[in-house]
Length: 320
Image 1 (tube, one colour):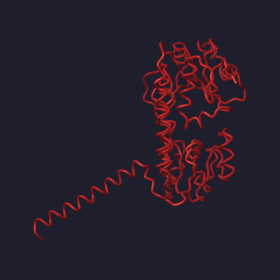
Image 2 (cartoon, helix red, strand yellow; image 1 turned 90 degrees about the horizontal axis):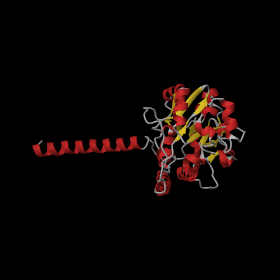
Image 3 (cartoon, rainbow, N blue to C red; image 1 turned 90 degrees about the vertical axis):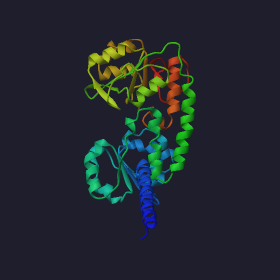
Image 4 (spheres, rainbow, N blue to C red; image 1 turned 135 degrees about the vertical axis):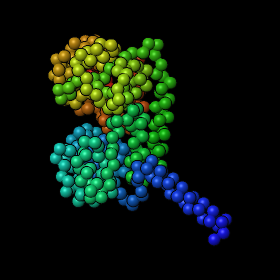
């Protein structure tokens, strides 16, 4: 074979390899999702529900766990209308039931590692869905692109993300305050004092609203444990304390006192400067994820002393 033809063949082989590599890279970026007609999704985390709703992809959600944590009436109605099977809690999942659905993909978290191993062995596609590790509210919302890839609505997902990001960025212009207040977010949960990492979407939201978050260094992305002395130190440096609770009681100070009588020694507690969301009544872990601009607006209003009809965040003086 003439040398020129050998060179042409080598070039063609290299070019085909390059195309294949680029295609593989794009698949990786898209969550390795491939188009499947009428995909069937099983989710072992109920935080997938807001994304499914935003994309109107209810026909694709076959089963979901931890429905008891869902307090959004619109979501509960749609779960019933679309006959989405409730898998119960993650502590009592029926593995055989999950398999029986023959899912296209199973969304889960790091806490479902044992089930993930079993599903992987059976060749059932699994995808880690860990939006709670996001470093900003927009990054948290951006998980909609992953969901969109699996329900054949990638364009709709991108459009939704872009439209909300515009609204969020417009509000950032109004986040400049003469003096930056300090907001610490901490709580007493299951015997431990915990707070969001400075790398978390919570810390980012606080700073986006024009405030400061006192904890500055950590390698974690989500929640970290602290001792009570640190809780006191960070809280007493702060103008406000942010807490998230789940309780039928509506008085946040009563709720916190019932969790630990040590809250009463914190400066923001004593001054009634408690920014809170009660998951019993406020859908902070559901619809709020799809509305980071609303969360931002509410925090900005609280810091400026403005009165608005809030959906997610309240302060003790306007307790609901």
